[in-house]
Length: 563
Image 1 (cartoon, rainbow, N blue to C red):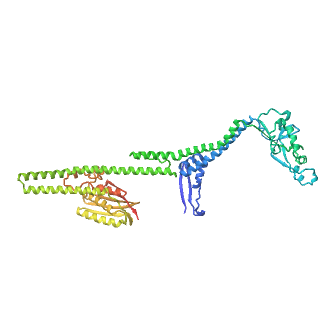
Image 2: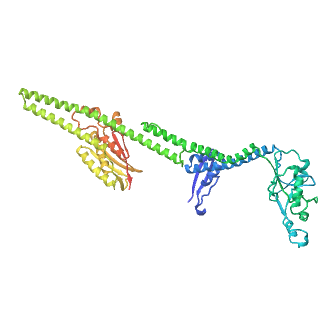
Image 3: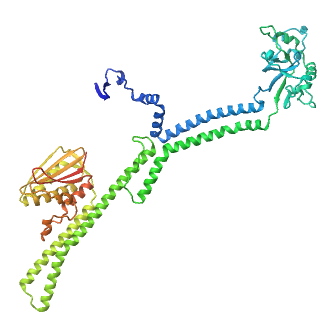
């Protein structure tokens, strides 16, 4: 199976084959530069790395965002720590040497030049094995065969004058010279040697230590044939560090934790501001406004489709606020309807109560005067009975209204087609008693569904009763089902709804002017209100309209789930 997707970008047209059965493993082949879904993120990062990173950090989960910020803070802390340590080391070296090359290092005494010259770092050379393997007549003692040599650095010949010693020693205050082989120096003499005493000290120490004449000859020569100077005495020369130098060196140990702390503090601040601050402030403000009873706002959701837990929580807050606002409107509407109902009830009770009071006063006065007329008594009794019956109907109407308000819809699985047949049969009986013909039809109904048959029957009964009062000859009842919504429509061929009725007919105890003028009317304006209440309980609504060909239409929609 192949599918083709077309789209326009500017004036160009591209066509991409979405699926090809010939491709291995159902692979998707792409043309005209359409990237794979998995590669789009990488492509976006390559094209706009900063924008892509910001978008990702805004929409990723809190856990992923925390990991990214922690990783960035760690990388920055390591890099800045190394840079700061290097900079402090250079600063310490500059302070220590004054910008000149440091004299610190390993030195040996070169008698030919009369100066201390640099020796190679860590350059302790043992006598060649050829000497160790010779017979005892090689002229070397056991100490000579294993003697260690300090070898002059090749670069020191010609380009390094060394440090003048002896009588030529310059004034180098703060420079300390130590014999690194302090084990050969008597403890009482110490290991430090003055520059002026180097020649004598070196000669004495060379005589005291093993000779290495034969081993020195065996050392390789350079291109000019010169061999490096050697010595069995090594000196370590260093400057006495100043307090500033020591302070800078000590700060190196403090710069690493300080840099880490600063990097992680900035990362934490950025993480809070980007991932936490906005949703937390939005939810805090929403909670305060909801607590104050203000629901006329919306909770901002930073990014649609975000994987952030707090963004989803903001969306949940918005859903809760919207539901609370809807519930408050429903409660306000119910309370307002109840207030209007009470006002209408109180108003309509005046007439029967006035009639009853008047008849009672008349009977009382006639009885006191002894002029009770049987015919008048019969008429008064009949009038009082009619008003009592009217009061009874009022009481029953109020009970119906209360029952509808407190109704709880109970969904039960059943045959909705069989229910409609029964509802149509009961409606036919009502229409026959009213002298009107009923036409019933249904289409597209699921065979089994979850619904409240009692509530639906009452909706149909009230809508039909209202239509039968105003129909001339025909009332039509139709039932249809579409995408989980069951629509019940009742049409009549009467005069239709007046403008005021379209706006207020679903309110409790609302009646038009003609009905109010009829003192013996049994209609109290509750039928459509009960329909609307039951539809709302059933997840739907009632809509009133006038048909184009004439007559009124009551459209009740309720949510019904197919089994």
